[in-house]
Length: 438
Image (cartoon, helix red, strand yellow):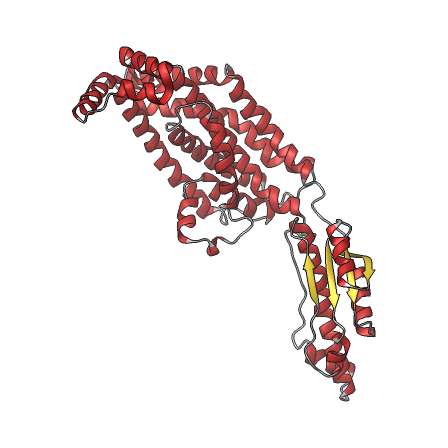
């Protein structure tokens, strides 16, 4: 009995698995999304952000103070990696003109009383005007100016203590009682490519799988070849094995794409890889499993092929920022924090950053892997329910249409006439054909 059931189960599973593989490799659009986008997007992003470190951002200086302190400040800014003094202007109007012409990407303004206020032991100000057309311009200007400012504050305090009769050692101890050393272990150069691509490589896996699977599901529904009818052709009760068989096809195809994104692309572009190979392979196993069931569950809502391209523009940026790569998740509003739990990328990308960028082990990624496991279980059952419900609707389509038309007539609505008003004779004809097919 058990052996017979196992044979029937394997036969059904294998039939669904091979059927789905044939569907994948017979649809040109799906192949483009899976293989051209899956393999091409990581290359494209790396080429776009290959120069992830921006140096010598040109800025203009307006020094109305023209004192020794402001001149020293300007020399030290020019000596930083982030900033290059491209112009020294007499007035702000001259600097603004350079800014408008894109000759400089920032302005640093020293007021006329800058040196006098410092000499009188008063608080003096420096104004910084940044170019927000690019985050990197703004970052470089702020970092360069602030580093020099902190250094200058320390020098001024030491000079004041020295004037009061303190030795150099005593002055240094008063200014910095507890010496500290800045250490940024995971991205020392503040490279934007390391910052962005560590989060995006696994997101590409999820998004291309979702769009490809949804494209195929929408096409089948348009052509009335719905996979929800597959359980009717199996020897046993086959909803579960339809989900597993279809999922296994995508799971197999995407192993190569996931390994390519996680290992080969970072090696090609010199992105640091601090994670252990088998730790990342374990993460990919759980991440791919969650992605497969996630895509199966949500693709059940896709009824038309072109719907996928609308979702492409809408979902991808949201899913990327919900990974928390650019904004701490603790600062997320409650709604967006709960909403982020819908996506496997939320946990997969965080775990990949912890493993590959920070060099952690599986104990660091344990929470994310547990969440991916819960997502896999939930989305598996949702996929089964969606196939069961859709199969029931297909079997009972005639009854549903009769009841709908009966209710419409009772309410005084002519659905065929409504279709004609909305879409003309063609729409009314399509409505009549749907009635006939049902």
